[in-house]
Length: 144
Image (cartoon, rainbow, N blue to C red; front, side):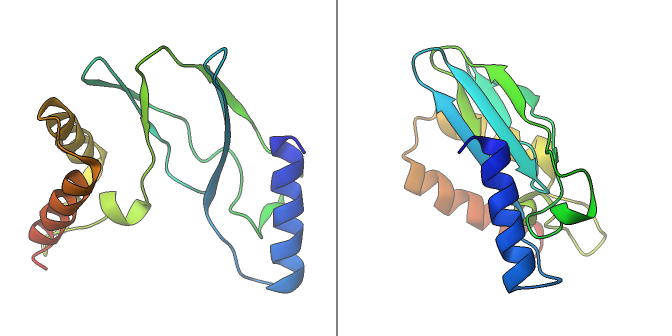
């Protein structure tokens, strides 16, 4: 199935099996020959596109309702397509990361996440160590 059909199929199943429930997700496909990345952001934050040690952009999101709620709107979700270049990286993250907040309400935010990941890439940290440090940074930001 293509991305739109996959979205509609999952959406219909969640709505039938768990009425009133929903799931945010990114449904995506990457053509490794052409570098074309296609995605539906079902209520999920947009990925960060990293290129040459910089955050180039945050991809559009959401492009569709969360899965399970798609029946409430147009049944054909928007599919975003971008051309990636060799060496590009996409950072997918949950909203809980950027919505972590201090007692005063200061969000961890997308900018702070992007800067953190760019530093980790520059330091050539392994993924597991980057994740460990990110968890600690989020916990410190929201005081545990």
